[in-house]
Image (tube, rainbow, N blue to C red):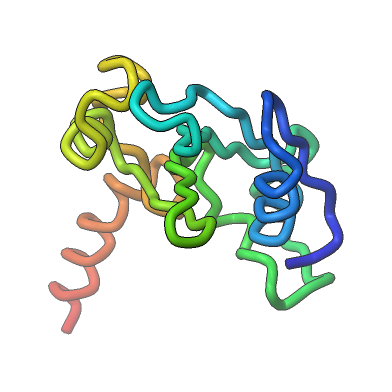
Length: 136
């Protein structure tokens, strides 16, 4: 990733902090909760940096995600076994199914989050696809 700063909020270990800074850039990551069953497992909330504007196209680093397509929030579980890894979480039911009894039931909203696209795109894409297919 680029050298843009990663703001970590919460009680991350030094190994977790190094890992997350190696995975992300230009964002804020909050430690929402540690697992009730295994303190090495943690629920994280990712958000773009406060000064990021999705309508600005940045070309400084080709490895950085297109900022116009970043979600406003993303959820992950950070696991330690066998190595540090991130597991994307799409919704509250997804978290409860994947990690039963690990986290409070309301730790992640039940509504699914967008998968790397602008929030309005979930309504625009079906419409744009239908218009494109109709013009063929």
